Each structure stands twice: as structure tokens, then as C-alpha cells.
Length: 122
Image (cartoon, rainbow, N blue to C red; front, top):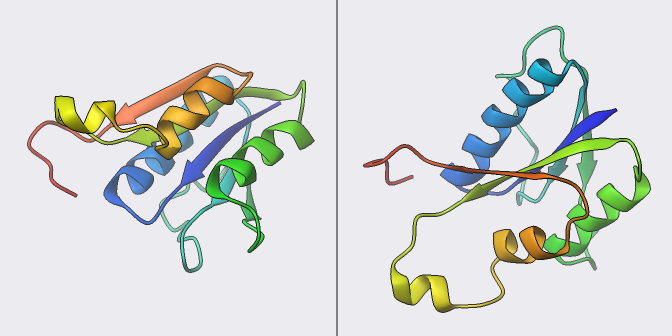
């Protein structure tokens, strides 16, 4: 069994990764980190006893496809998907197509959506 996390180049992505460490430990499972960043994924905050597999996004896939493909490749063994979400204005909420919205609608596993603490501006 595993927890999958979508890690982006943002404070929300870092927060999702930190939450995923905690979620994987809580569930007593491994972590699969889908790297949606432009560069290498920094796993220096990972607990020493947590097994973390990094899945790199292939260049021709969208961010959504990379995460959904990682879920599909592990069908039946993913307990949770962790994503970071941004606090947005009512107008911002109306904009379709964000990564978090797509994953919330398309993922076939429970999704843990984590926000930055109030007042934190990435």
C-alpha cells in the first residue's frame, strides 16, 4: 500500500509533501512522490524510516496525466492522494483547469487536500 503526493514548484507543493510524510507514517505505508517540479525533488525532510519512491514526470505528459498515470500504475494499492491547494478569491475559484481541481475530479482514490496555514503567502 502507498500514499501518492503531487509535488509542485510552490509553497503548496512543499506543504503537500510534508503532509504526505505524516500521512504515510500515520497509515504505516510507503510514499510515492510525483515530481512535478522543474528540478530535482528535495527529500531532506523525509523521515529516515519512510520509504519514498520518486516518479519523474515525462516531458510530454501534463501534470495531471503524470499524477493520474502514477495512480493507475498502482491501482488497488494507493490509500490516499495528497495535493496542495491554494487559497483563492471567489473569482479565482471560478477558473477551471487547475491541477488540484482536475485531480479532485479525476482521482479514483481518497484525496487529502492541504492548504498553507492562514497568513502564509508561499
